[in-house]
Amino acid sequence: MINKKRVLAIIPARGGSKGVPRKNVRLLSGKPLIAWTIEEAKKSKYIDRLILSSDDQEIIETAKTYGCEAPFVRPNNLAKDSTLGIDPVLHALEGIPGYDYVVLLQPTSPLRLAKDIDGCIERLTETSSHACVSVTYPDSSPYWMYTMNEKGTLQPLIKQKGISTRRQDLPMVYALNGAVYVAGIEWLKMRQSFLTEETAAFVMPRERSYDIDTEEDFMWCDWVLKRQLR
Image (tube, rainbow, N blue to C red):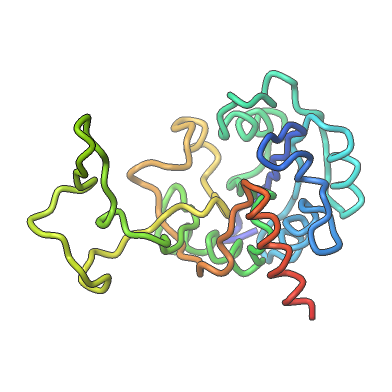
């Protein structure tokens, strides 16, 4: 609870995964991937209830083992490759009333800490925003990116008077890192998206902003966590 507002956290974890098969229950530095998110969420100062949204029985049983509630099985039509990320959140909110804020925690961000979750919630309330999402500094600036035309020549992605050769001369930019999404529930139901022009940002360091989408991502996070444990 924060400012007398109740907070519901949702971990979405479907069974199908093409990039890294069965990644949500695959062992990462000795624990299932999903366990890293559950354990940090349970350390939060503000989360009143933590639930899982999954279509997969193995994921459900694994989450329960680590103390995450699974009050329902997600319908198959909300567990497809084409399913929008917001749909499982809205589905969960339909059956779980009585909360003011919702926090979406994707299990593919195992390096995210409880202080990042709480920091994003605090940022939401401090700025009196309807939503807040975590971001980080991208590896490459879009001001140094190009498209290619039909002739095979490069065209700047962002039109500029001149191309800066020093990174410090470029405008500061941020990229979504997928770690934490927070919003007022009634506002989210109307907007059906965490991302609008009203959304605030909570900046996380790059070293905690890895989002597992490939085998290489999984291997890197495994190395980072094993190094931290040592």
